[in-house]
View 1: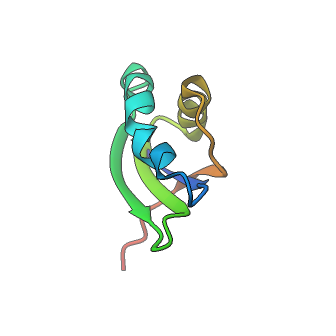
View 2: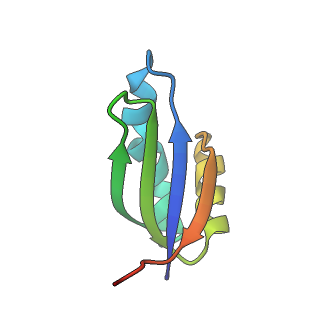
View 3: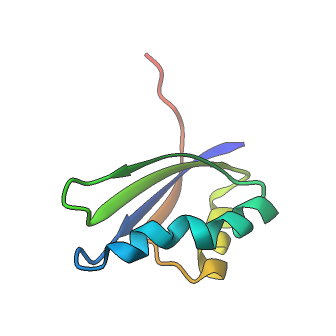
Length: 82
């Protein structure tokens, strides 16, 4: 499984969109064996970075599209250990 990073920008006046992500994504994630690892949110609540574990970035993109949710970028990453 690969580490996948999802970058998303939100309208700061609509916190509802950020809170509703798991409701729409979880069924899509289950269908594609995608595992959520963590989410980082900016202090202004306008941006998130989610770290996921999935077969590839395209399966995560497909999940977001199927759920009708926006994203800025989705890319594969590797964990750098010193």
